Amino acid sequence: METLKLIFIIIPSLLELIRLVEGLVSGAKKGEQKKAAVVEIIKVVITGAQRAGLLSKINVDGLVQAVDVLIDTIVKILNATGVFEHGGESRAEG
Image (cartoon, rainbow, N blue to C red):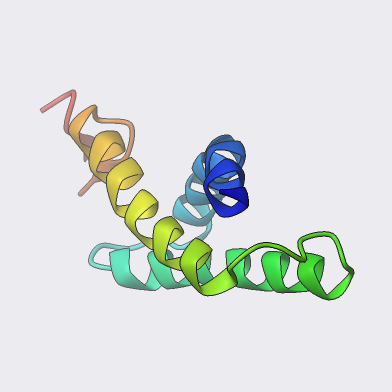
C-alpha cells in the first residue's frame, strides 16, 4: 500500500522529469534513451531515499515497474495532445 501511495504522490514530479529529459535529449528516435534516463533518475532518487531511511517500506522494484508503465502512459498522452513535438511540428499543429 505504501508503494501505491508513493506512486500517486510522484506523478506530478514524474511529469516534470519527463519534460526535463525531453528538453535535454534532442533528436528523433530517442524515446527509449529518454525513458531509460528518467527510470535511472527515479532509481537513484528512490534508492538514495531508502538508504537514508526515508522509504524503508517501499518496494523499489515494484515502484520502478510502475514508473516504467507510467512513463509510457504520460508520454502517450503528451504525444497525442501535441505537447511533445516530432520533426519540428507538434501533432496539434499538423
